[in-house]
Length: 86
Image (cartoon, rainbow, N blue to C red):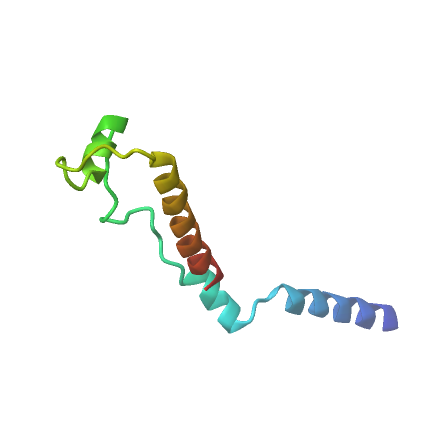
């Protein structure tokens, strides 16, 4: 009888440890799905993507695109990390 009670207590303990708190559950479920975001540009080739991203054709060619790329990636990374942590 004691063994059965101990086994039942063990199962209850496992069941409770598996259950997430209500706040944790809401954080997991209420995440925005960005797969179907309308603001995303669709392009089938690299040239199409660049054409969609281009701001103006009258800008002079960039002398140091690698610096701009690094800065853009750093800004993207900070924004995404903030979104993931928040």
